[in-house]
Length: 268
Length: 270
Image 1 (cartoon, helix red, strand yellow):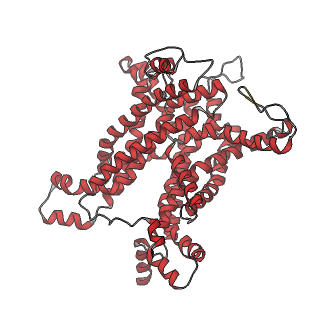
Image 2: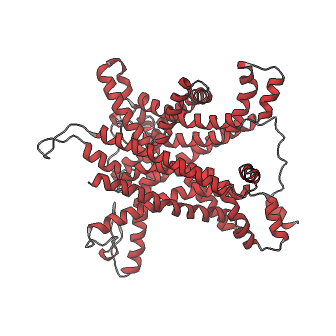
Image 3: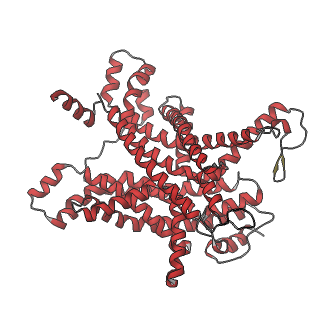
């Protein structure tokens, strides 16, 4: 089978399209690259979904944590503590069990045990807790002068939050939030590792990589391919977040362009 | 019983890995500040690649890779006149004398060797993260301090060891404590590395037992075992938070930071 045929039959294998049977004998490099890349679709789907949803819920949670009403504050604190204090691996396990029980009593929610919904919910909650802590830290770090100035100008309520508090919070939280986005993206590899089953061998990139490692007894090819995909994806995240971060900081005095290091050493 | 000792395994792993990873990180951070270009590039590439790839991939990959690398090296040294190829198709075959640990070695050595590989893998992965944190901390040391050191006639080496290193810890500690938390969360993946840790035993003992195979038939108890693990990790996180808060306090003493300044003022008035 030539490489273009492989690409045609396996490019969307992870979604269930194309050739059903995975290659078992004579596994070529092209097979590995195509199938692992196909699995990346799942990683990207989980990553983007969790980051997008988590972006909104985490801010709500961060605000709840600053609330003076203990009925709002305490649940937020516990949510953050439980999800940040326990390994994601164990969270996946528990979630799968919980979803299985729910499924038995409420058949309507049977999709919960499927990875596309269930695992996405776990990842969403997890990133919500972590990002909420980051945003909470940023809220606490907003310069006092900014808030006093807002009060002096007569900003109140939502408008004060929208125009003064929120932009500063974003700006302060952004570097740490970039890290969190990278981490949650890397965590998507845990989905099919235990707990959620890969139905009809529709798995993520790690699933196919370990499949090939098992079949060929040679981990030196599939895992570096997987690593390559993730390095590229991580660079994309860093670029996008860097651009957003630049925009958030555009009103601040920019650091002057540094002279190239090499020159500095030659001409003192 | 093995379930309870496996908690000890996890704690031991953390205790051994943390200093080792810190050493890796320190080497990488110092290397990235080096003026010797190959060293600088090497450290930067190491940090960039390990940080860009999910840690699970390393856990799955490194154990086999390191094992084969060690055995291959020993094979080259111990059996120079071995004429068969090492890679026979999909098999990796070295001479019996190069096996690690030796086939004749008792079971305990196999376990220790597996544990050692796990520690090394963790140290390599978390060393890169620690390196990144420490590199940032080195940059955060106020420039005036370095200039003062130069004014006193200290050499580059002296400045690094006597001025930079003692001061950078206070800047590194928030990042390092964060890393410690991540390290704790990564330990349940140990079972992937073939170490019989808490997760391994929780899965093993909790799995459905039928009367045919054991004396104590029971259904799927994994939930209860995993719940135990959850509580263990939550408690451990809480204890770590308290200890780290103490260390932070201690390290801020006498430093030219806001926290250190607040402490100095509190001491002056008291």
